[in-house]
Image (tube, rainbow, N blue to C red):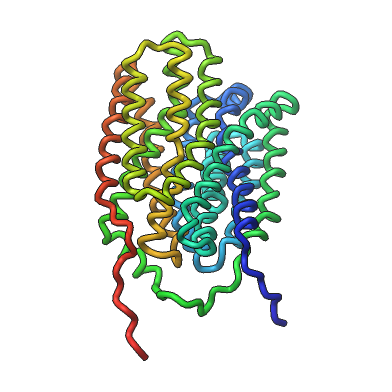
Length: 404
């Protein structure tokens, strides 16, 4: 029995469904730190047990990203989004039920990490890349990234309220139900069958050899490693840094909220600017400005005002690398394997994330200070600014397929 034809996707449909999916998937994970104290206190676990599970989550997300992307490129994002949503819900429920450290790592670390690979940027950006005209692609990716940023700003207070009102376990059950909303939203990103679509046909192996053999792809991966290192180090360790310097805990809370709020404007602006500027210059500017902002933050007297200004500035630069990086990948290699190649670039980001959060704790234990890690973040920002300059944004030259 023939299946009903799937209508082409409209731009408002893509933006609306993609934005809501990323808002939910990214917003839920941004609040996981709120569960640290209630879970560890009730279960009698160390903070390291909780932190290790989240570190595994970052790695699992990164490792599963290329696989989820390849499945989305081959079978369509629709199926991957549904599978990711169901896995996400299961992971959240099992987080609430886990009574041992390894069980919690399996739920919060592996299940939720793999699920995030299927319901976040790489998969959604693949749909955008295949269905939005190149001249509007960076802008559309900026809209979606801004939605994920707004999810961070919106969902953290929502999750805090759920924990206060219903307890930490019921809050996780509620979030498990909430992420199921991604399933109906996935129908809005169901693409028509692309079998036989015109364009260069390439195997997965050939695509990977081509990408990893191309210097610009490796430069983009190196820059994204730095992005992950910086943002996760700041997001996880800045509250402790401020507390060590005698700041009121409320200052850190406001600082994280400001990062989330200004992140909305930064990611949207990056998508807009990426339509007009060469994206390699935009990426170099973002990484250089991050390093400059950190240097000023370390050199100026530490006050609540300096913390808030730094948070606003770093928020503007927080995920503003996401739209131009993915848009450059699409420009160079086309959209046939955009989700898979975007997943590999994101894997580099997640390795950087792991290094940022781990080195932050490791070097603090060794030196009694975060200063060394701050300066490593500065040096890496300069490195990323330089390695993005030689990136070539023009489509890669390919030999024409032989005539039959």
